[in-house]
Length: 247
Image (cartoon, rainbow, N blue to C red; front, side, top):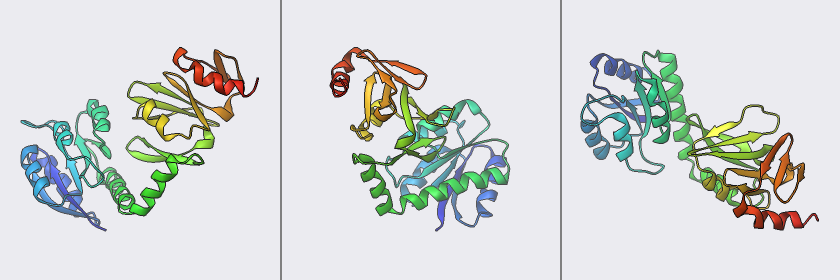
């Protein structure tokens, strides 16, 4: 499989280096090189582009703005940002960039990012597999789900989840045997809809708990290990129904 690529950068030296790296990578095919996002957008609409190596700080239309106007969906071009400014990493994450290369970067770093794009394309080009994963996430007897973590999809076993904490645009998934929680850019509501209701319950606007991981509970709180979570007022009725099974 070969990925059709374009490179976009208003700095001639940086653009030349990215194009050189693309040309020496066997699974990448350089379709075009552009010094501005507007010209690149025209090419994206007229040709089949799989991957964009995209600078952020550019006149007229910057890289983040270009990423926002691209069509959504699995077949849209994927983006790897190439920039000298690390403060844009969060914005890059929000527009579903596959990776974020901080200038100056070498070929090894470039190749690692390109390989992510290749692996992603392989996943998308297996619709039966993807459909199976999506269907399994929606079944009550799920064993795992996939979360986007630092520009890649990470498989999380449902049996490992202790509780999930919502933090505005993010969730922190706390897992057994792992001290550091997994951070993913999604909402608690979106994740709640994917989790099987027989195994997980939202008990607070900021918390979902794994029912089989509860070590003790009252009508106002649950304990999971050393962590105590208060049951929110709007969730007390649903939690009371669960609690009633054990009283």
